[in-house]
Image (cartoon, rainbow, N blue to C red; front, side):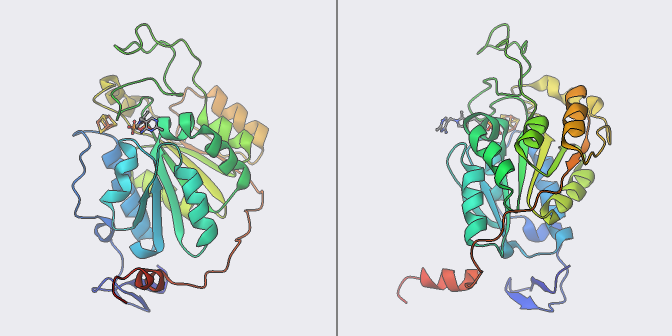
Length: 289
Ligand SMILES: Cc1ncc(C[n+]2csc(CCOP(=O)(O)OP(=O)(O)O)c2C)c(N)n1
Ligand code: SF4
């Protein structure tokens, strides 16, 4: 871990002796996700990853949009920004450019990130600002009760879309690689340790890192229980050539896990120097000072 750690008093201190544990990143808020929702596995893996990474909660900002998955920041002790629907990546980009010293992670759902937020997703891949983006893909809009999303299968039959919507889903991995992302991976919410290791790699990646996490919505898509049998660990091989990586993920059935692409485009340079600590900013907002 870094030489800055969280003390018993929760204050940043150089050379502090206490190692971080996943529980240091768990807030007192009880998740209101449905029992069995895949997002439980994602928050557990993220807390584990942050402990492994070694920066204290007050050095980490989690930014989300709107959706069941976008509630995630509240369940951690990190700084959080629960923004508006589809704007997680745009907000996270602003946070990172203003505070390059902080670890910035955007999180959200497939509706949030690929539908209303699709434009921001593409441009985040292109800009290559140093942050991690985790999409909890359940191939449905959970929070608004089961509408099809851009990754829903064309023939998925539901009350709200009888017979299916008949539209070809897009492939988030090939889209990200084509748009310029340098670190593109897929994981599964039911494999918390593999996911935690991947998240650590994504956090440490210099530039924009994108991890799509298959995260079942057991309420509106109970058939996604079967994903644990469908996913295949390390089925996606890591390519360094963009065209080869795209060909690889397009040939996959959507359940292959692994890092699809590691590229070498330079990350966007930091635009400001971090001159102010979070504690100084907090003091400016204290009432009566
Ligand atoms: C501008 C705007 N449009 C629509 C909505 C309604 N809305 C809230 S969450 C959501 C979709 C959530 O789906 P997803 O991002 O996949 O997350 P999940 O709930 O499945 O985790 C929608 C359409 C909104 N809050 N704001
Ligand atoms: S509706 Fe679906 S995505 Fe939302 S909490 Fe329940 S299981 Fe999770």
